[in-house]
Amino acid sequence: MLKFIDLNHVEHVVHLRNINNVVLQTHTNEHRVTFHFIGPHVLPVQVDLNTFNRIKSALEKYDVQ
Image (tube, rainbow, N blue to C red; front, side, top):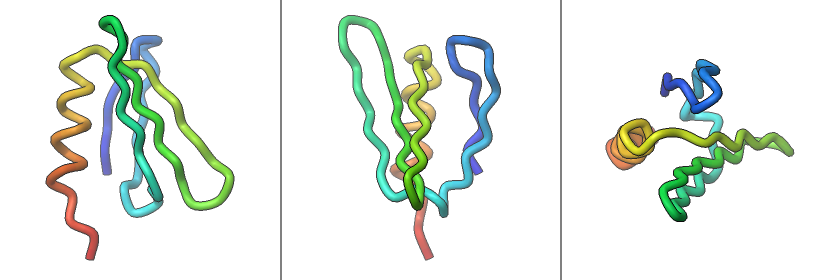
């Protein structure tokens, strides 16, 4: 499970096993993460740099079994 708060102060809990793809974007000090889930579900969020790096690190360490 990945738990974080976006720039709108909304807390998200993402179950990593349900993710098909993640898009990480940084453009002029804006950091966006888009989670693509099984089926037609997408979660786009804008986060601060600290959270962006934490999400990226957690995804790199995640081992699908």
